[in-house]
Length: 258
Image (cartoon, one colour):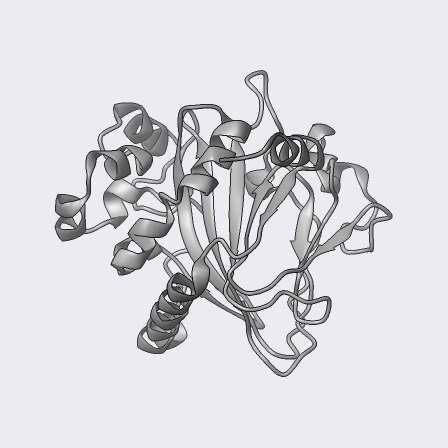
């Protein structure tokens, strides 16, 4: 489904924008379920994995609604993941983040999981699902296109990872857009300076020989696992002994890798 221009963009720049990929119905379904979960979980929202000042978080979404089971198998996104990670990859985590209005939630430049490409190549890739418009004022992601190729972490070479980078761009787009990002590319959140929340969902994938950020076999209930089709079980690494071994080796049998 990707054009040659799409592939070049993702390979060279480190990201690909897929406008309108969700469609209006799916966008509204995800928004509704995310807000239901924020209301139901209250102050505990995101606490299984991560909470932060000036932003609401949710974690372990695969276990929290059928709509999330569908989204992680979106063909266009999986094609991008294969381009970056190779043919054998798995979902690492599925979370949501909502930047609070007038919240000072800017992040330093970083690569997800502190990842540097190894001898086999890239091993982390993220997808950002825009549940609201991303603008220059409401907490859009800043990123440094091409930095995934440098095989360096920003904290190792920059004097100040919070300072503007001469090569950075702001990732903007309309609600319903999905952006695939090579997660080795340097990036970070900016502050939301508007009166409204800025919501996004993050479907994060990793190469098969790396541990999941959220150990799906432990976190997904027996009821949900029982209804999953083989393709989804494979994507979640539910029947993969190597994934079990990697998780145990990294001390993540409780479910969440900190």
